[in-house]
Length: 97
Image (cartoon, rainbow, N blue to C red; front, side):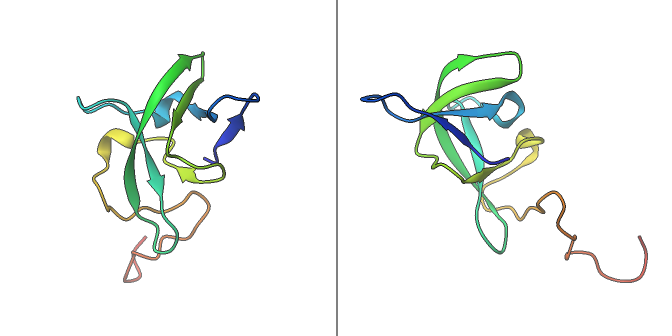
């Protein structure tokens, strides 16, 4: 998922993220940012400003255009390798599917 930004003059950046991207393991809400190659996740705390039916408005250190995990946030750990949707799974070896 690529972040979309809403900003009014004089306000901090407000980003919309899918609800499924938000996760709170008891230390406050956040999202998993996806680094460049190799694709790995890093935890980024966010402040939730509002929640809609499918998206939440958040602020934090996540930058416009950064990719974040949209599904399965509860399954990830810091630094874990991930595969982006639409990208081949290079972790597979052998000839079995």
